[in-house]
Amino acid sequence: PRLQSQPRNHRMQATLSIPRAAGAILRPHANTVTKRYMSNGFNVDLKGKVAFVAGVADSRGYGWAISKYLAEAGAKVLVGTWPVVLGGFKKAIEKGFGDDAKMSNGEEMKITQVYPLDLAFSNEQEIPAKVLQNKYYAGLTGFDIRSVAAKVHADHGPIDFLVHSVANGPEVTKPLLQTSRQGYLAASSASAYSMIAMVQEFGPYMAPGGGVISITYMASEKAVPGYGGGMSSAKAQLESDTRTLAFEAGREWGIRVNTISAGPLKSRAASAIGKGLGSEKGHIDFSIDYMKANSPLPGNDLNSDDVGAAALALLAPQLSRAITGVTLYVDNGMHAMGLALDSQSFADSPTFKVYKDKTGAQGK
Image (cartoon, rainbow, N blue to C red; front, side):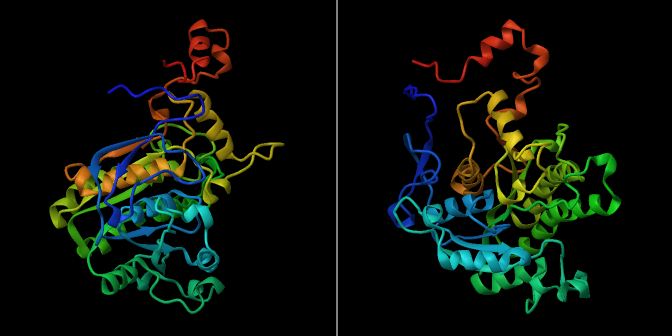
């Protein structure tokens, strides 16, 4: 049946119906969008499943949204958090995240366990002494990938879903021409190789039919000024590795590996990327403005729940048992664009003006 168009600044969102025992009905984040339409075509019950999400440190990022959607569907959610921000995250959990943690049944999302995890280290032998002496790592042991994977399996048994929601480039504000070898390799290590190491170490503990996802960005395939320090290269590596890992991990353990190319989100990490000259706006703010002005769906305010819902669809075997090796774009179609509608070069173009005036709210 034809879906009726919605008023401008609103949108329809198909949601997945879940059995009551598994957490009622999936709905968007309480602070973002409003449920407009429900599809009863699929029941996604992940009760009894175990998910490990690496890279959760607050309620603003994609990792949090993915965790929330998995929890809503009934999965047990475990997270891995960088030791540098671990203390603050644990305090925030104790205090509560308010509406950010609310699920559709009124209950708060429960994070079953938080593990200290530094994805820069695949095993204990790689951890230098100076790291162990750092104040943020004081008293911590077993925060390398191999140790965490073994702990998670010992504590909770087979793992069904693995999420890599991590990116870090110490020189991200530098153009590639000014990036040092050390900065470039650090970006690749933390943002790309860490995904390989996670699959290496968690794969043997994963249940057949399970799923792995990561988060990438279109700078992997297009030049995006301001996204530097080798991060564009790291994302290209991540997407290439996704395809190879899909084959190798699929043959080895029967698991699926995909990645989501997400549009810009004002997360804590993204907000740290440089501010504009004479402006309080950061690179991420300009990126969001650019997407709204030029994407095929300008009326959609992209938010973390869009990625959370897509991640659920890619992870749940009920929906994607035959999908692996895919880069799924969740960016309002920005990846498909070749020219910018707000370009001054086309300011007087009658064709461009027609589309600049269209916002997706003209349906009847």
